[in-house]
Image 1: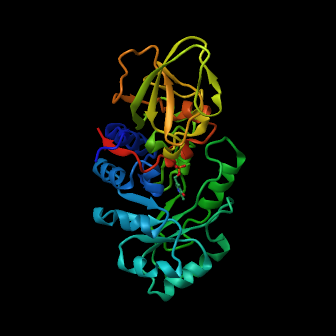
Image 2 (image 1 turned 30 degrees about the vertical axis):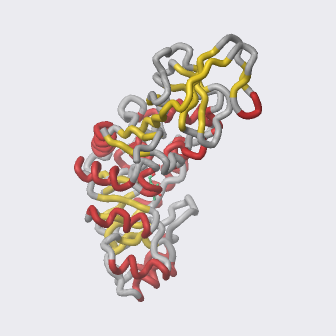
Image 3 (image 1 turned 90 degrees about the vertical axis):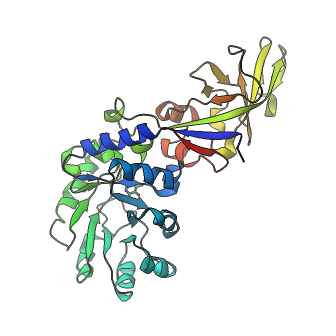
Length: 338
Ligand SMILES: *Cc1c(COP(=O)(O)O)cnc(C)c1O
């Protein structure tokens, strides 16, 4: 069945973004965070294409996400580690857990202790072992030792403090590789790259820092079909709560797209489509959006409309982060790569 809404995904832009980030990573390998279904784009499609471009290290959050990618036979790390419930999947599959806590370390050792990754906390106080706990890793085969930057998208003293804390751990474990930088961290400089970088957002067209503005390209464009076109007479209103009133007779197209698809209410009266030629009018509904199409007489029922979704601009309009705009894209979209 062909859905009335689809995500146009630019495979060349995705691969080019990875190559840009790989170049900026210098001698370090460049991996890819494909958690949350590849930031909403579809993890399988993303991972396949990035592997084709040369990416060799992939990161997901959970074992269910790892299982979904199993057919590709990639090197996968599961960022949330292993719970008791995950052990069967963790032992059977080929993904590596990223051990975060002393209990996870003990559990993985008791389960036989295959090759694993380890997250160490250097100040974010989210996931990770304390550096004092590193002796617990004795006897484990650690592949990659990681830490995560709390404010790489800003110029803050904390970045250098985390860098120094992480660099100080070199040689303290059996780890073959060290990895610190996410997308934004890659722009902080060569010191932050270590052996492996872990971009997510910028692969998908997100711009977490100005350094990426000229090189990272848009990957995702939501497209929706027109269900109805109508003329709204001057003085009439459009949509819930009648928030928009026509000043003059207005041609309006109603699209098969709404906040349940991740086209959020923040775009009400602000979003645009077709390269800025059409404006969203009134409230975004759950499954519908109204557009002023007075400037485009050829937009008829069944026509496909491309929403403007450049992430740096969209994030301002929607009042939401670029991460939320990507990961919110729902499963009613058909996803197609070009
Ligand atoms: C999500 C995540 C990344 C990727 O971060 P971006 O900001 O999207 O580049 C890297 N490392 C870890 C541990 C993550 O959780």
